[in-house]
Image 1 (tube, one colour):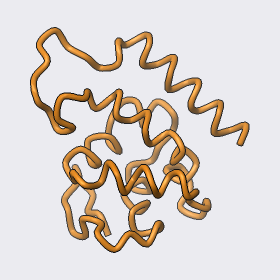
Image 2 (cartoon, one colour):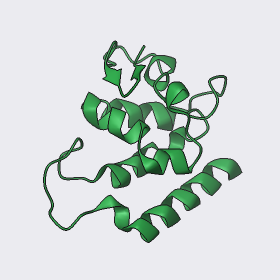
Image 3 (cartoon, rainbow, N blue to C red):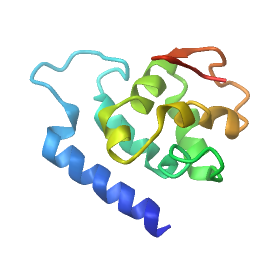
Image 4 (tube, helix red, strand yellow):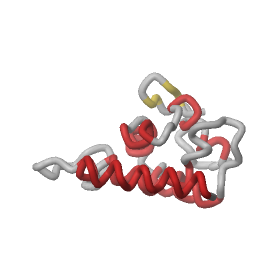
Length: 118
């Protein structure tokens, strides 16, 4: 719990310093009108699971992944984002979270950067 809060605080600080990833012109990106860096906050409960393939994935993480994963491009962009990397997320491990959550509607085979969602 303490580690998760630490990561959430680091993530919030990162977003404050970098303006939440917002740019001058608000166009639609991978996550619609919500900047990827801000969307990454929703996956804060997944910080430990994105670093260690053996870590238990929390129900809060699985719920967030299911919600964000309705748009596979958004989920991928969040998992590969600077925000995720700043809290120590390993993209190779992060892409396994939907499977580790046993999500039936996960985007199996979706190409996410150099990774494939199992």
